Amino acid sequence: MRTQNLLAAIAISALAAAQAAPAAQPAFPDKPIRLIIGSAPGSGPDIMARLIAEHLYGAWGQRVVVDTRPGVAGILSAEQALRANPDGYTWLMLTSQLFIATSVYPNLTFNLDKDFDSVSLVGLVPWVVTISPPLPVSSVSELIALAKKSPGRLRYGSGGPGSGEHFTTVMFTHLAGIDMLHIPYKGVAGALIDTIANEIQMQFAVYPAAFPHVSSGRLRGLGVSTAKRAPGLPNLPVIVDTVPGYVNFGWYSIVAPKGTPAAVLNKASAEIVKAAREPAFGERLKTLGIEIIAGGRKELDDYRTIERKRLTELVKATGISIAK
Image (cartoon, rainbow, N blue to C red):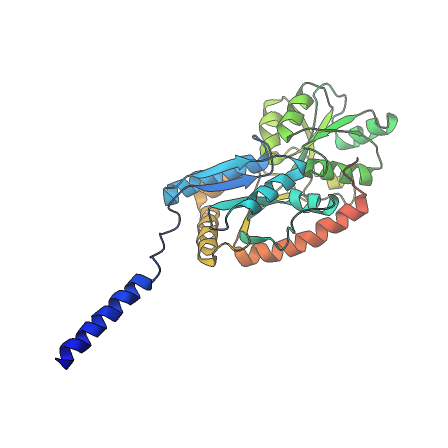
């Protein structure tokens, strides 16, 4: 009897423990993921995000929905991401633009350095200075000479005050000692269209957005912002040869709201790094002018620290403001 009572007690205890145990967590991902970007459709981040989404669908069988939230130089996208549940199903594409914007705009509702966990660093990308074909210049030096003859008359576009295009142009005008009129747009695609139409005369754009227009002749490229030439546009010189000290670049990375489970961050990071290192995917990135980094969470943490220092110093040096 005692043995039967003991077995019954054990069975009851086991049942109670099973009922109290948490339900097994579903494998990640078991539903679509939202990847928020702070740029308009057709921009460099948008193109990159869709490539990543395509790869992850093939690897995981779940959609990654690219959610474009342009506005206030990407700040709206960060605010949107932080409203989401940090369960791993909302990501943010973090680019150099947000670092610039958070150094320029006051009274932010978030801390970019503390409110997002790193997932993966993908790569670097050059800016290309493009001009409207009717503009009578064929080099960066001739563009500078023309701007000096007519201060404030040449018009350049950007994705808005504090955007990457705005900053990289202000850096260029600051170092070249020229003055041009800033025309802000809601996205870089609109600025490129108006450069083609000669509504504005010049536009800095990241390589993925600039390349189709330059290669087709709709726009003329004058130079690239990086220290070495872009493989896909080998005829374009580096701007630093004409403007000493002018070296700048954009970059792409993925982050998630603080509090996202570490296991999810690690899995996402490993898959994105794996993708960037695969020859086929890597070749697609190279055709977009992207220098592949393929760094994991620790690499992105370190890179964010370096870039915060670099871009904060450049913002101070150029005197860029949201009013210009």
